[in-house]
Image (cartoon, rainbow, N blue to C red):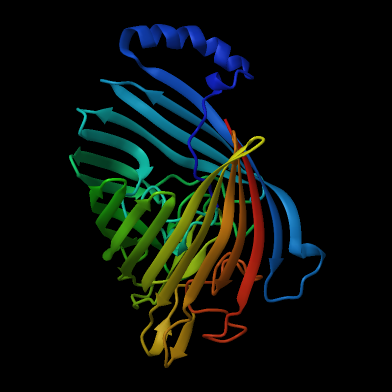
Length: 408
């Protein structure tokens, strides 16, 4: 899981000696070319109470250190800037880069980014209000970051994003917890089981029309899947219609998307699932699905001591996992005989974000069916369903989650 907030620079806090070191340097830079260096980070904790397939016991609740991270932002008008973030996850025992790109503003309308940058697809930066994101994140279609080149062009009431990504973002070390998959921030297809697949050569086009504070857009994505055993390229694609509508204190984020992967296993057989991985926990994902999401939020300013804002929200996601009838091959090498589609996936998050200076706290009630994180069978979901319960028999699971983050 990850988080969504603006960095507050070290120099504004004044509690770290490094700010004193950089202060004279930055003053000289600002006098010459208005460039600036901001160093920040975050420290987050999680409080968990879960009610999954098994009965509630002493292991159903925990208090953990979620994440700590380092951010570096070098703003250099007229020159080349830098945006970098590196994350550490003690719970999983891994660490990795989240983003890291060089940017150049050719003029007020045109920006170039090179490196590990966000994929322009769907509602950006996020398609959700909560700590969990929405279901597109779990199939690599929300806040995805890959290695490549992106062009952003803004003019009057329209924004265009064009991007080419050679490959996914770099992996961190395999986690001590889980199955030893790739330590990575966003989900990508990975070689696992009987399917030695990797993502290559991805192209993205996104168009957004701006009307006052609201945005309406369309997104297209096309890329390749390379099977290293077969030395063969196949293709994958996705498209989405989306909107980010603001009216007073209300926000609405509707989105509908479709994706398909034409993937073969190492025996040359067509697959109905592929392995995707992040946070060192790979799991099987349907190679074809529709996903519909709707986020509703209301922002309310308050003056309760350090608390200045309450954001109330509900984010709903529905995923229709598709698989043909007859014999279906899975990426783990197994086969299933189906007369119906895979189990659908549902996620609904109801919560409140409490803002108090540099501290942001999410209070989330997360509900899921056939969800890879909301289950005792960690990593099972967004695919065929739970084998021990049978296809279409996944249970309705709930987790109450409090995420407390200090951002500096």
